[in-house]
Length: 423
Ligand code: GLY
Image (cartoon, rainbow, N blue to C red):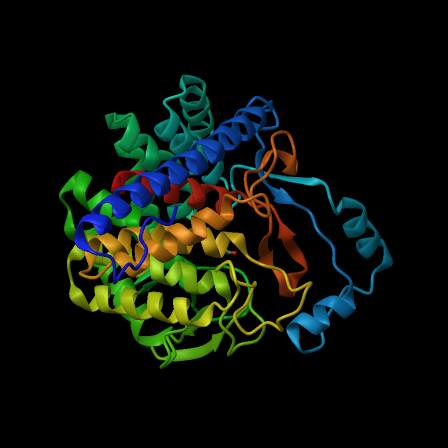
């Protein structure tokens, strides 16, 4: 997928012939690589989709279990592991098995969304039928109270349905979901509340930036600025409080009722001050979207700063980050392919919005190329039906560590689709 190389000293005619040759060869490599990836993706998704039964479960990841010593080493501090032998036994027994999720799970939109992208990229009608089928089963949760994740769940499923098979019923679902999301907005704080569990007063996680696309969409459908204004306010408040001077993001900021900060934490990262890889990816994606929708250069600058920080901080030889930028660099330190695929998708879009965006496109292409290598891309019929290997959900919670996860697949396909739009 790397198309461009620096050539400084060739005479002009040779340069032109040479560049044509290289460009053709590299475009061909891109095409071969993408064709192979889509062949695998379509096979895996179709196999998984055929399995839907009355239990209405969707593929999410696999269960994993790592021992305490590994976790302590990765985290650099003690961990509280269960001292209930039965619980430990059942977690170990589940380890290595596929983890499916109910429609109320925060990841439920990614599988239908992947089907939509795979359909868009291949034109395969079976993928479309399955995309429609798996999107429709999410209908009962589209106004579910108690979670900010509705944006992920409905925008990835119904949002893609609206794009690829528009009808008014889908538009209504988007708007009703946006209303449910707006009910979680606190004007005194200027944010949408993330979690209803825990002891935080008003927790907001960086992931919540990913819900704003659904609000922008609802604003366009209805012509009502309410959704747009809430999205912009949330992004502004988050920009003020979530970021450190080096543009890394805390995972969680909790607010007092008057809008002052209660505390800042990194719940799924190495420690509160570390840079949790997926959090950085959600951040660059979220601010790139905000600039696309608002054309406010404050958001563009934020996206650029975060993108530059990511490119500077990820030191792995294949640009697939470890699960946390501050994790120890060792042979068994888990990667997070999901952070890489989210970043790649975001940086392709960013490259189209900024002058000199080629460096972001090159970086994203390199990530997608590496994710399409045998190290990360599944073989047909393996990897529990998922497309990518080596993602990490939440290492501090000993959950989904170094395993396939549905959102890595979703943003990988979105990245391939965005890359295709560049050609
Ligand atoms: N939104 C939850 C996560 O990224 O793990």
